[in-house]
Image (cartoon, rainbow, N blue to C red; front, side, top):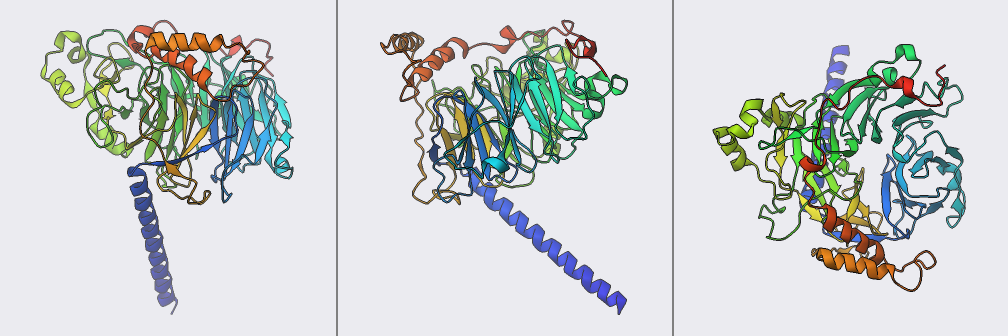
Length: 542
């Protein structure tokens, strides 16, 4: 009898596992079918009065935080039946907000701004207040000496978070009473500005950083922080290769990396590079496995002559992985200077790594540009939005060139904005995307006309036409005219975003054609890997 019971138990368990696996597969297939079909419906979420620079979701997807140049923070409740207005309003910052992060259980919301401060808001307390009330921060952190560029919360503990700043510091904050880290022990000092930081979602002692020099590093909290005796190489566990090459140029380029992010399992990460395309890495592989471009339209047809495509030259941008709850986050989305948001479907890292090409330095050089290898490059790769055709990655000028897979066909292009899209954020459990940028409105994009948090009549088809960029002379004259309006813009809040849009039209005209190899020439001897912990000004090591 015991054996028979054991067999019955195993049979039930096996059946349950098969049913669960089947349900997950069916759900994943359904969600991917929705996302592959595009997100043609949208709705504007209105609450800000200026550019929206930062968006963040709580882990459950219930809460969306938004912040910008107001400089206010709005909290949106996705458990509402009709999501129209923010449910909470937070104040306190004096200048533009560029970073937001929810703690592990959504007890706290952290924000960072160009006023060098980080604010902590107790959401459990604020939600007990009248929704029309304006909440002030519960704690203000003034440890940085320059703008806050990134925030990331520990995946398990509400009181622990990391901050990245233009002052070249990563600080690990621990608000628990039993914390023993001194200010010096909790500070990682670098020799250039940090632009982004994020905890690994499943290994809390691992985090990734990016900086103004173009470096992306995987670091370990155990060797990055704490007493000097236990620190080693600034905690670097792995450096990802971000320097790029083209056959016609001997020297390399190191694009600035404005942000870096993990998918939900931490198996892949994406770097957003200025004057270049979003670049995908596998966690344990230093070389990229894919580059996301938009040389064709989603249906595979060529980009019409004269039409702009994906570009990232003018503003700080943040992308995100997602999949509407699909475990491996098979999509990546990013905003663009052409007023669109692009979504790419990312194959598995193993497949991408297998398809990556490698060429020795001599075969890559311009002297050998007529070789069969170069002909294959020309056949396989086409980059309409870049000034060069073949992105190769190399750790040095003599290193072999690794050519990652080019994902040249986005799944969809989202429209609806009239200017640059800076932030694209995928909902963690629902097939929806939130986008924001130069305008004051946030756009919620959906594959269907109805959603759990919106009535069926509130989502409408998004216009597919994109506002054409005016000629440079016209963009300049429009900006001058706006500045000469009799009423001063400081005294009267504009009713729309026309002044800001006119300014960024001029910026696009002036900066969009910049060649990364001209503006970001890499010199491997210009900086070293020496430890600069001793250079921490005004901090005494305990």
